Image (cartoon, rainbow, N blue to C red):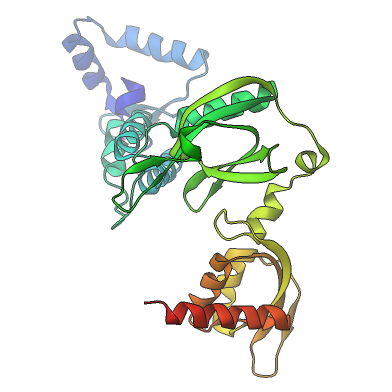
Length: 311
């Protein structure tokens, strides 16, 4: 009763406690309740009093407080990788950790217009299977699909399961990705985990080599755009003064900055060259431009011209 119906702002008076127990078919009197409150305190529960008329009793929560629950509910409701059904179920479970008064504040916390939710319920089970394979140092097998022009799910790899060594699980741009090693191509490959089907831990031992052992997911995350791969290059960017927040959000703040005469900044960043990187630069509407090296500038301009010619 104290756990579900009280919090820091709302308590129950002695009369209310007696009445609620009576409604549950339990006969109680004040001395017995005082004794029970004392036993709760002996077992480590923090039972406080709110000095009102009459005095109210409240129990301090030992788990997540309202601010922490609110943060988790917001994250769940705005996550793209969760289906609407899963999102609703998780929010309900989180709300059960709050008092009845706090639940009203958690209801309908975030509304994200146009947010496309995942269509797959399997992401949790897929991630769990992948981590199990990594723990056992085994490979995994799975089917993988993409959408065709009719938005029909089309199984890739000629309908055959992939058999790969899982290396890392990454959360990028709202989705879970698997980074895996393929013996066939002797390189890393990446898959959206919510598009994987029939994920199973294989009997085959995981591949082991120096590249897998030295794989640095953090470096890849800073260098790549989305989970798209590409040649690692050192790029020089010219950044307008009012666009430094864009750089900080994307690359962090631990970098050397050269201030130019016109007030703009010049910075060097390591990126993976790809159409997604060019698209990110173009999307800043000139606030960020590629200043070097010259071959990269030339390639970027060629990419823009080619893009402009497309119907």
